[in-house]
Length: 492
Image (tube, rainbow, N blue to C red; front, side, top):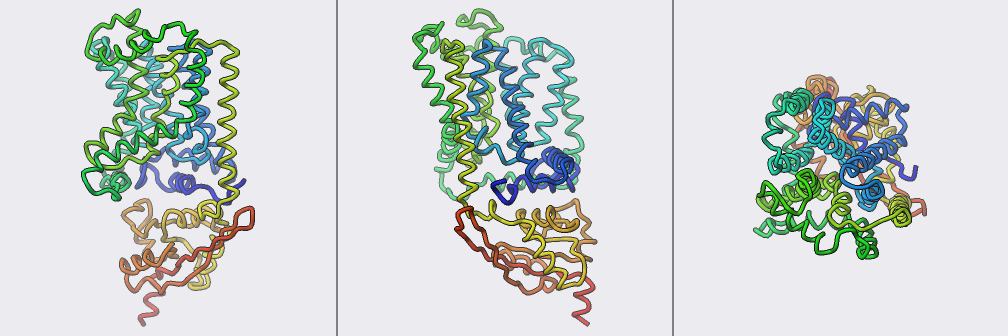
């Protein structure tokens, strides 16, 4: 393994799975269930978490291919699915397991079974759609953007009334709600704590003027295009080389796109041979464009920032849309050349990630997590003579202690019991905690929160060395949230 530590998101997901039954203070619980189960299944080996992320990426691409086959021929479907590997989300960003990688797998599955249910109207497809909607929303709330896209498609299509009268769609809705119900109850019981995280992440405090309503949507849209640039450039290259052999003349292709916008307000569109062709075009357009457009619209209206990583799953239909609306004529030789180029992109992304791991001196890559956990655990034992049971710290150090200490240690993230409702506050108060802070101000905040129960800060130096011997050091602060008996003994 090129990096010494798992990513913060991966560590956090494992800890969630261990302690958070139906909710966390950041995301719904599904990523934690998967991460912790997988981690324990393979003997708490860090390396297996990289394999887990790739499973979801491959699962997503397989279902993109299956969905593309509903609209394209076999060769075009293969190329449309392979085109996703030219998007950074499927390459450079994919090794680190997190809620976004799960969404990359679940979104195409949801869309596929919706389309199967919509066109073939079988109970199995509708119920699978309901299950996947539930799991998607239990992974990350951003899954609602896909539902918005599917809803816009449904109300714009000619079969809307038929769909409303279809009892099977209500079976799918009931299934999804049934899966979500325990999490919704958890949110209610915990004052919708996770929505505070979403609000804090989207505030975008670096821009305070009215320009934030323009800058943030453009920034989000620009990020999605930038991250998809390798895929887009590859498609444009092949499209230009083969456009003279396209089955549809150029004016016809462009007219399809123009008429698609008009068709949303019409019951019939003469640009398509059948109503099913028009439905297919609407479906592809909605699933490819609407999720990104909704994010941009929210930024435009509210002036809040949408993190670029929230677009992780939103681009899953871009390859299919390109090959559907701008279809170059391709054969097996063309497809082979195309796949070779996509393989090059995959290799370049992997190489870039490897180079980053090798040359960086970043704390998030080069922390010897087991050594740090052992050293800090020893500090507590020397101070109290008791085994350490709680650690108060930020997400990074809290999860390191929870995963790599010699025995079970519970992380009290940011030393806020309200933000860690899965732990017994009375037990925490009784047994105290080791405190870790990345900077003096953070530790001072702990002292302000808990007064004399927090000991004077002590310093510890950490060293991060890359594969070429370049070293960076960082000073961290640690101390103790004294156990009750220690504090009372000092008072006496």
